[in-house]
Length: 398
Length: 230
Image (cartoon, rainbow over the protein chains, first blue to last red):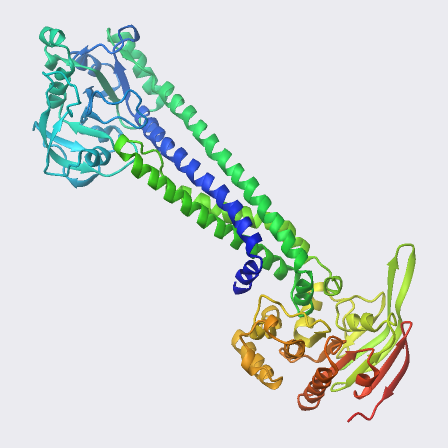
């Protein structure tokens, strides 16, 4: 190994340029890959959610309309339905910038017990779940908790009053019962009870609407759960029955949602693959060039090694190992820079929820494995050339 | 101890439409402990003879017998094994690896022969002490004079206790005084360690100080005389 590093140091400029080529490629792979990993993780939960629940909303022609809460019982009577949860969503920080790059901070009602139908349950970094039937408590995702500067046991006033808000804008105090662990998907969410969610929903309605309806009798949407493990086809059939049997609502086929998520996922996979190809071309060509030069310069050394007993396979391994070391160096540096930059951008973007990179163990393994594998592969031809040299020709070369 | 025998050794090269006979039916027996010089003009076949004896080249016909064992039919891998374990090489241009220090250069053959690393280093230290370079173990080749580099090459050739050391113009790149010292060193190793040397040279003065001088001309042995070297 010392010989390899010594040889690399003998040609500092060339080694630096070669390693730089790999650094660029692996840096691109890491940043593009972490972007893809982030969005794919979002899509994954979408796929998991869509594969476990049937979203029910107002029909398309009444988009955004409130639904009577009585529909919950009607939905529950449809064959194949195990549970129905009403859904409420309000903005935690209304009146923000019109252009929002990151995920918005949202307050939603917690669908307690939904994990028994196949959804992931909450994982707490600190604190506990909402106490059943208890109002005035809130669970915060890690990003929103950080944005608001709140920890378990603190009181937080939500929604946050925006500058220039109406005089009648109301913020309600909530005690933070727990803070969730980061999962890259629901980190900007805050969870409250159904009753608190309805209270917050009422505040978003115009005075006219608010006086005309009892907010305790409406929902913005419903989530219909079949039994855990129900196939996508059966869920589609349940959605069709909902649309047939429950008037005034529209259930979307889960298979359509899953297909949409997967289609989006393939876009990010294509970005990732593009970055990988870029890394392959830049890094691979650099390594091939360097190793060819190294072999040309060291022909006599190869001849000498063969004279003192080196086998073809031993020379081949030495040169491939050298290429692999170049790849590992470039990979580590490129990955390190990529990791540093994506972390920095995530930290800088945290205030605007611009948390868009996710460096996973899988990505780390791919980036480093790819760098080493690509360099080794690129080193094969020069290494074969070295290994097959005739010792006499090599020894007598100028 | 080993005996090396060249039997009707012939080597022909293709050069365009022509065939050149570099060595033509050479018979030569080198006994263990010999100190032999091969002399002749340029193109006489000296280096080809050395390369064939060192199993670096395959003969067109004839064979090299190492302790009576046929080598012509051996695979490349087996020939490499024999080179690593039974033969040592010294070249005019030293051929030290610049990426390795003195000690590592000497133990290079141990690496490929799969010999015990610690034992190899111990042997290398002994040899470097013997050639007067015990204080330069960690120096790079570029920190040594030509004569010192050739001493390292001599130590390297001996590290695996070879049956035969083949030296190709070993004093060709150094001054007369250093050449004398190097020859004295090889002579001492021949006498004290019983190492067999075959030295290819065009320096008749050097050849005259070996035990036996073989003269080649146009690929044929024209004389083989025993000398009364000092």
